[in-house]
Structures are given as C-alpha cells and as structure tokens.
Length: 251
Image 1 (cartoon, rainbow, N blue to C red):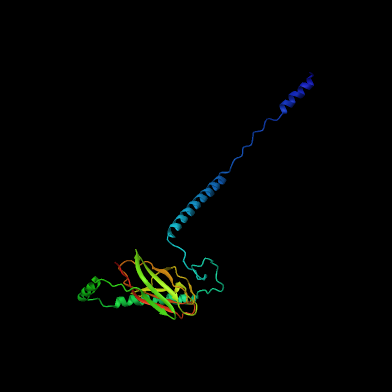
Image 2: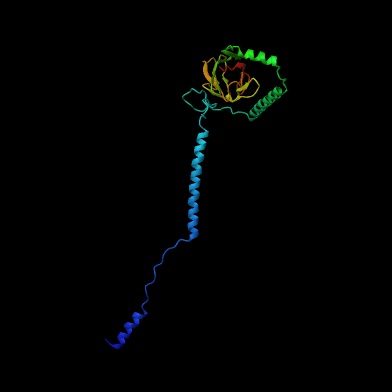
C-alpha cells in the first residue's frame, strides 16, 4: 500500500464521528404534580358523590309517591292516561290557606298562654274524668250536597293515627277533590300533616262507595285528644265535608 493511501485511511478514521448518546425522554416534575393532583381530585369527588348518594337514599327511606294523581280520572283505573284540560292549583288559594292555618295556630297558642291555671280541685276532677273509660263514637258521618263522608274507625300505629274512611257521591253531578286542601287540626287548632291512600280524586254521579285511609303523621301518644277534618271540593268549593272533634283513643 502506498504511503499516500495509508495517510488517507488514517485521516478518515481520525475524522470519523463518535457515536452520539441516546436521547432519554424526561417528564417535567410540574406535569407530574399536575397529573397527580387531577387524579386525587377525581378520587375525592367520586368518594364524596358516593357518600352523598348513600346519605340521600337513607334520608328518603319510607317516602312513597301519592296513591292518587289529580291528572288521572281514577286512582284505581288501569289505563293511566292523563286527563285533558286538567285544573291546576291556584297559587293565591294555596297562600291564603297557609296563612289561615298559621294564624289559627298562633291564636290558639296565645289563648293557651292567657288561659288561667286550673285550681287543685279542678285538676282532681279532670283526673277523675280522664280515669273513666272513654266511649267509642264511631262511625262518624257527614253529608253535604249529596256527598257522604264517613269515618269508620281510628287506630294508632306508633306516632301515626290511621282513620278508615268511606266516600260516596249520591248527587247528580261529578264532584272532584284535591287532597292538599284537606284540613286536619287538633284540639288546640294546630294543623297536622296527613297522607291519603285509596281515595280517588273524582267521584262520578251516584257512584260506588270508595274506602280508603287517612294517616295523620307525627302525633305522639297523649298529646292530642281530638282531631277535626275539613274538606272542600275543587275548584268550585261548594261541597264542604266537615267532621269535628273525632276522639283519639290512646289505649
């Protein structure tokens, strides 16, 4: 090999570039922290959602849908198609009803505060009267313009009073009720909450007798002696069914 060729080979070897180092992909620490924070937020949000769902489900236990619907012709009708031209509740009527109930309750409280305290002799007489056995006065009936309302019996289930009632329309016209207008008060004039089951909202002329229940809620024993019921038809409010002083028997 010639000297010139040897020099060229050595020069090419000397000038040959070395192997470049491999590039390694590195993640920025700020991106790592951001991803970890997002994952943590997703976990915390999921846990909070599950806990809220569990508590909401437990708080709604025992709450059921109403047995009747004012948009249906009959609660026992299998063909549950909405009625055309259904009447909606008037906001003014609802506000007036709430005001009348609250004002009546406040007046009853004031009268109770102003009432003189009974003397010892009066308290003894009252105890003797309470010790006497109470007489059941059921059934209790009320009638107005061909609409018959009857309270057959009253029983107690813990803090709930259950009234077995019957309604019948013997008139020549259809009568409708909206049970949100059912007024139930105790012997002090305070409004009580109720739940109606088994009664339709529309009673046809000379129709059959419907039997249902009215549950009066949150009535502990020995707190209420008598209850009163009042129900008006809707929307005319010409038929009024009123039963006063239904005895509560705490046996």
